[in-house]
Length: 624
Ligand code: ADP
Image (cartoon, rainbow, N blue to C red; front, side, top):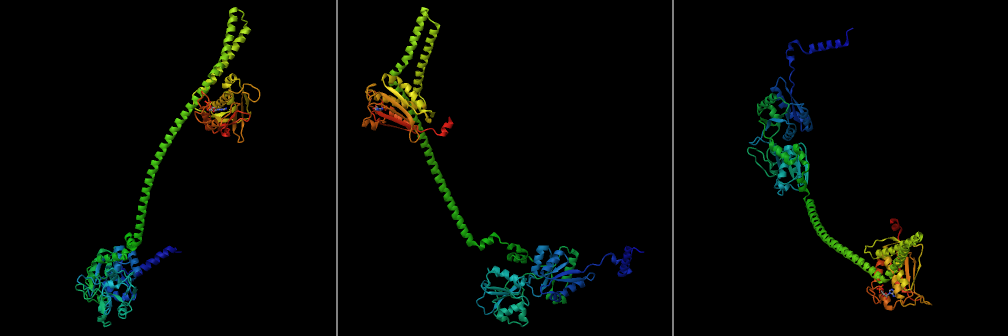
């Protein structure tokens, strides 16, 4: 059994032998050249393209018998695709499409179609803008504003784009300034008829069409007028625009140089009366013309390869919306001026505030200094007052001190006598020396109390029991009380809350009140019968508001109306050697502690001096 693969090889060999006769063996070594493929723009469909361009392709095929030539009719997108895919060797297309493909894909013209009517430059494509001869209101391109215009197609180069460029030069944007812009399509002669019949104010014709229609007798040239007519040198037709080069034949970048040269030569050699030229409506081929003016036109219109320029530039936006931009600029200017003004005001106010602040700081420093001076003065005054009150009590204090000193002296003498007589019983002597020590201690306590009281010091507030202050003050004036044969009775509450106060100052206040009470009773009968008894009663307790109250009551001469009114005035005194500072300082001290000091009549005669101090809060107690 023959294997299937071997069978396939055998069949292939037979087929190859049949297709290539033995005599052709040497030719089959190099494969036959493919035909020259020419893409042709079929802007009016394949049939029209065939009729117009097929003879030209046949002419080329005749010039290249070894490979022939074939025509590939394509529309605009098809052209792009063929060039991009390199499926053709040459491109025969209109001027506008050529410029686009050149810019995008680098195709290069090798010959330009020679029109039967050309100017001396060789260019032949242009437009004539026609109006009816009797339209005296449209004389210039600028008169197109607000008119109806009919052209062939937006993509037609000579049929619209060239005229468009001319309109823009005259300051007319056909898409914005016209009343209406319409496109007729083919055939183009209907444009002339529409203008003639008044269906459109203006018509755009490719150059020479008007003359051709007139020659054919289809229109009366006298009924038309070409707007802004130009007469390019050597060009037989009337046009409203410049002239541009006609269709080119271009090679692709991939097309071999030798082939391109050979095709160009073949085209240049085509006689003007060749049937191919006659079919294509041209008069042979010429060297490629300059297509830069077409680029310039497209760039100004932002079409074709320059469509990207349509992306709005800032300048365009500014030109379009200048009113709004002006308003925005004004608003911005106003805002800038406003901001500057606000900033300036802020700076001025800040400077003023700084100055005021400096002034305030200076004032506060001054006030602090003044307060400091006042505090110092107060301290001095307190001190002087304490010295003064002790000075008044000096004789009594000396007497007080004399007692232990005298006792010490007696005990010491007794001891000496017994020791000298040799009768000193050690137990008795020890008792005497113990007594000496006790008396010395008592004297020491008196001195310590006095020293404590008169020491110059800054107030030190701390929680204290007011009853302690009463005891300390009484200890200092007990001597005077004894001298004056007066009694001091105490009635002190046991459950008093502490007060936050300076111990010595409170003692000073109580001592002052007791001393004044003793002084007021100088004329009262000592220990006499009836109400007139020299007694100073000191009572402590709490008032209705929970404050700690101290009352010092006497049975003295009481307060006259004048004394009642001026009691707390500095230097008010009714005593011959008095300074009149005691009570004013006492009130200052009590008020500095948040309390209050006042006088009232004692119902049984005499005076009651009272002061209250706020009880310490929990917080203060915790601080201890
Ligand atoms: P001084 O004791 O040096 O006179 P004070 O300021 O202590 O100064 O007292 C002022 C005056 O108030 C006394 O001179 C006295 O007239 C009067 N005064 C003070 N306490 C009493 C009192 N308990 N009874 C009557 N008068 C008093």
